[in-house]
Length: 103
Image (tube, rainbow, N blue to C red):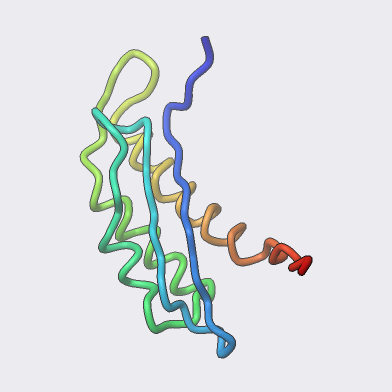
């Protein structure tokens, strides 16, 4: 079966001024279980999640996870994936259109 060597998902709440007011980032596949990356998410709060803020959050995420090594990937490779996937996930979350309201 197929499985992810690393994965990241996020939830961002950005107010009308463009500032991030809430964030959650979760990583999976890199250690024994999924992990909430609270420090990486907190680094976005109160800031506009621009490229610099996203890169910083991704670096914080990489440093927060103790990645495992196995026959599928080294710990260093998984750490690189955490950083890259965190940046990509945050960027994608900010570019997706909001669902329309049908009242």
